[in-house]
Amino acid sequence: MEKLNKIEIWGIILIVIGAFCFYWYSYRPEQMRKSCINTFADFPKDSAETYARNCILQKGLKY
Image 1 (tube, rainbow, N blue to C red):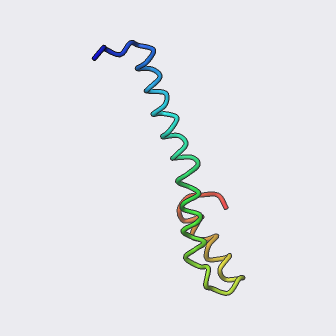
Image 2: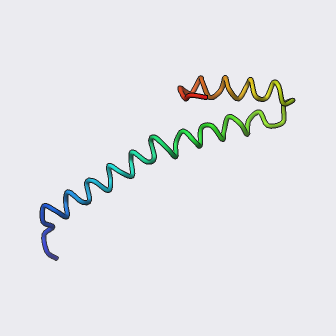
Image 3: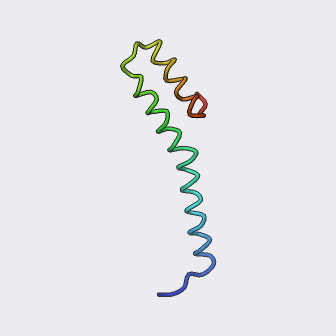
């Protein structure tokens, strides 16, 4: 098997960094929001929104 050249190595590094950034800034926060909303889905609407908002804020996300 041939050795990878510098351009291929940098391409792999950029793909890994891009995937990590997507996970950290897009996928992970959305999953946290969904878990908070689903946890309080059976509550009455007014209190469910309040509890879900507090849950999201406790996880360090913006509502």
